[in-house]
Length: 467
Ligand SMILES: Cc1ncc(COP(=O)(O)O)c(C=O)c1O
Image (cartoon, rainbow, N blue to C red; front, side, top):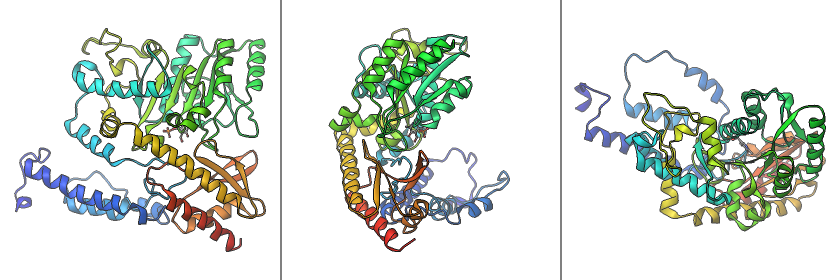
């Protein structure tokens, strides 16, 4: 009956209609999440053709909610990589804890404004607390600060611009920066977007464990100074995307101190592993960095769109970004009270803090730490199983939760394709030097031992079927 009488203000549903919308969506979401383990690890065979059929002009009139939900849950969503599923061992998996989705629903439904403190002081403070907890995780003390971002790439960009402004001022064209040749490409992209010629990014060779050669970095800095360049930043990786390698952060911190350079750490994938004992040992010295990128949407199992940047001196972020206008409310003068607009490129934005705050308050940090430990164990287990397979070479021993391997006599691209064909797991590869290698990256909170066993079974089956 309701549908027969068009409401006067359709964009303002009444209580009954709101309940219907939420219930209908929730029913399908819950069914979808419950079936994640039995969904294929990837299902994109006809997805591009299907996507083409969806191109359409601006809708003039509406369609029923149920029909649109059917389209989403039956047609569009299934034709994807199953990124939140347990078999997604590709790239750097996300996960997406359900509690964060509920928090997002609350945040977008109440739609408060956290860009400036005055508009929602308590909510801005909850987000500031999340940032403070991340500072604590990294080992930062008083005076540190940071912000939540849409992801690691944006965090790297904000860090690089902050370092540029702090170290070089406005005359930066001769500024050079240093990172390993395994650094995530968002670092080079950030340099380019920050106004540097790409040739000012020095990619330094690595040792056999894919950790940057700190001696070679020091030599490159000296050579550049002799040429009249202005070295201003060195970057360490706390978990490279290729193999999960962790640079010697203590040695890099020492080098940065000797040379008076900004020390940046890209821990988008790896930094949350400092919550574990093994991760802490691998990342000694991380607290000495001037800036650290961490991605909750990777190793804190959060939905995509949740990144973070923390800096040792919050004042650097503020001095880099602060800009006021007469139409804005007063910014806070107390150091403790944060106007996010004053320390970031964004003004209006989503209340992304709630999706981290709610699960951390509901559970505390312990379940997160345990899951990260589990991922380290699973990767170690998989590595030992791979080692037992004739012809498999471990190209990169796991330092965190990535192992890279190859078969010495097979075409590894074809092997990868065969492993993935069963659709119980999805792996991806990368090139190390001239060698194509296959990676297993264990990050999702939904990946447990039974899925790792499937991964090993599928690798064996792919090898057994002959190439
Ligand atoms: C080490 C590292 N840094 C940065 C990024 C970029 O992060 P995002 O995809 O969130 O922009 C990634 C992504 O995988 C990464 O692994």
